[in-house]
Amino acid sequence: MASRPNIIVILTDQQNFRMLSCAGNPYVRTPHLDALAARGVRFENTYCTHPLCVPSRFSLFTGRMPSEVGQFDNSNEEGKTPRQIVNQGLGHLVKQGGYKAFYGGKMHFPGYWSPNIGFEHYCNDDRDGLATAAADKLRQLATGAEPFLLVASFINPHDVCYMAVNDFMEDTPENRKRKENIAYASAQTPLEEAMQLPDGMDEEEFYASVCPPLPDNHEFQPDGPQAKKPTGHRARAAENWDERRWRMHRWAYCRLTERVDPQIGQVLDAVQDAGIADHTIIIFTSDHGDNDAAHKLEQKTEFYDESARVPFIICDPQSTRRSAVLPDLVSNGLDLVPTVCDYAGAPLPDDLRGLSLKPLVRGQARTLPRSFIPVENAAGRMIVTEQYKYAEYDFGANDVQLNDRTRDPGEMRNAAADPDKQDVVADRRRMLKEWFGSADNWPGEARFAETERSVAH
Image (cartoon, rainbow, N blue to C red; front, side, top):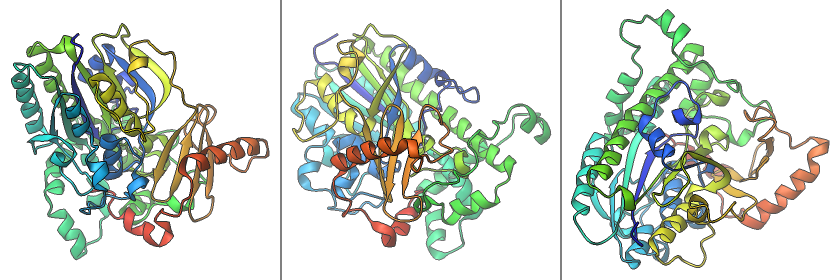
């Protein structure tokens, strides 16, 4: 491989860690992503920094926590991000390493477009048009001498968001305006197709034989955080959807995941066709997950694994590791920038706290030098360790949450008050305080409802 390999970053939107057939999900087929994982390394314990689009994407392309700039929701206020941070966006960094940088598809950044963080924008479409444009761009770039970073950011399986929106959004002027936007309109046909039953199959056979069952952790966590109790159309889905409607949501989520897989496959095929596979690093991840009927929730923002834990695959032709599944704790939002810059030989800001995954991928390190990773949302903060997830919320009952990842993988019980867990709680509280410091800049209860209103968009 050339000393400066090409780098491709492929993103999906709202794809949780289970939504890969290579991760053992029997209800979804992702042959192109499975093939990528078979040629590389899959990190099975990867979490986003904030399970919501704009905050997570801010992290992915800056390597920083969203709270650093007060990005707690999907608002995109101009000027919210300091110019110094914008100027250290991933595109700018790799350009300083001698790379060209290109971005196509969904951006959803906080108040700035891709040129501001150093990318040349090559495609506005985030569906089939992006797949074609990215493939064409790769074939064009393959003829050049300069190495490149190309991002292809696909929308799906995000369209599943609109199932509950369509069922329960109140008929208000604001919501009618939301339903007129391009993102909403573009999602309707894919969602309708994803909700169709297989040809020739009636409902009884469908639910008896092929539709995913309710997950084992479908019920609310009895002592879950009141700060994150669902509101709006999400609350109405939790209260009113019956078993079949929840299962249809799970079915549609699988079909929309399968819809994006061949789009990704078109990009991967172009790498082979262009003759650049042996000197191109391919990285795949998602901005956050979907609750997928766990705890009677759909969409995102929660600290539960379905919402905050995401796939992360790196295919490095120079690595001898193939079909490797690594247990290391990874933060895609903190670690993507250091990893890309490490591969590119590009400069890295001194104050970033993420780690490069390149040494692990190439077998030059046995494990990552960290004991936990941080996750945040508009209501609180969490740290994830090998065995526990510990969260503190800023308001409401059950404002401390401890889940045992080993004994309670479905996160059905809050162990924070257990007498035999008080040393664990104290130790994790210390870790959380050391990382996050003060919570004074969090929105607080008064503003929290405003952040929740942007969830589906």
